[in-house]
Length: 164
Figure 1 (cartoon, one colour):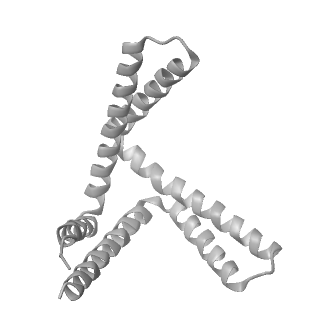
Figure 2 (cartoon, one colour):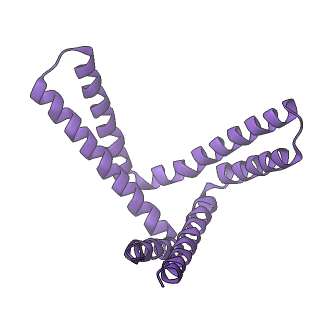
């Protein structure tokens, strides 16, 4: 068996290490990369519309979507800190809604204690993330980094072990 996955696993581990060592800088870099991606999507959409000069609803919709992507991309690029602060709040709200939905399903469908406990944990974590976004996002990034490092190390170990 060839060990062709090892280079990508090493890159994954290095990315995880970056997330653990520099969580704030990594988040800023990811936000800026997302902004650049949005700007590229917007430029492509505007160029396509300009080339076609379509006045049909689909063409105008593409133009409107592209202009919106341009505005959001520029906002993220020039207000990265504001966008970074928004991420954990939105994530926390999603966790609260998910937990509440699962808790409702558990109460309605048989009161599964494991589902109720996990839903309760999701709600509590969602509240923490939504109302303490400054530390929550860095903790989340560090945890993601640790998970990437673990995945890389175990993947390399498995590649080396299975490769013999």
